[in-house]
Length: 438
Image (cartoon, rainbow, N blue to C red; front, side):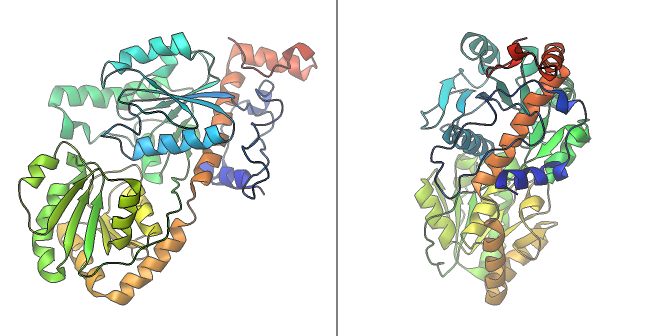
């Protein structure tokens, strides 16, 4: 079994969507996706369809509200970058349409769609002007959706990192938060009722089920991580790190509160890596033995996470705690709360500990600092487990879901069913390598 087939076997338990999938029109590629940039490389694998009659998209457009270059970018933007880069390196024509600021990428095109809120009006216009030839639009529903099916007739795939239902009120007033929750929980599932929705964790799958998305339309792909450079030694006295955007639901304020009592038992330094709207207020507290680094380079983040004794993750909600996997790959166990996304990334008692309240969080923090043998055991298990999440597995799995999304669309559309019948009857005029026009 190839790595792509293995990836598909893990998507939704290997289940395929119901419906006339086998009646899809001819593939958009001659027989399979484009060849790899270096087909002679050991990791290169021959592409194969996840099911008979699969349609592989040639041109893929991601629509997201932020680029990785945005100072407020987080795990969702990193995931989009990894997928877009991986597909671009495999020969797909990939573009990203998003709000600014943006920066050029080596393997895909990035187009600025305007400001934080104006982009929601400009994206449909820019799509009609420049991206109508896309074989697949991947809409990133990061809280506020773009509702692509309302302005796009062709195949659409919806990517949801996590459902923001409980987070709206932490950022907006009651009226705006209520509107946002209604759009995300009611409007988005209805607009995407014919489309697949892909996410990154079982917690997010459960949240999607909770807002009414049918189980047979949800696909879960692994959240991959890049293999790090050589590791550096742990520091002593210990360094503890928290990594991410400094916003309300990350609960850095709670972490600082816990640190005041924990440091009496552990000593060391607490390093907050990242930036965000709450940083200035938290820094003004002048907490003892706490440093705020702001945004750092990947090399510096690698050094700090490698040196750290523990990664601390006090967030109240995540799609998938990506930094937890990144830390584990660097031999750094984590302590977090037993909340969606975090519980998917930490195997309790094996790669770190999950806390039910601040008191248990502090106990786990102190215990993992003092019990060196336990710390070493969790280091080894975490490193081994995190190695099973390479980025290429995420791209492999997403590639299959993209093909399934296009195939489903053509199987469900009147034009697609008509072309499929002609193709089945041997009509050579249906044998096109371009997208089916509707």
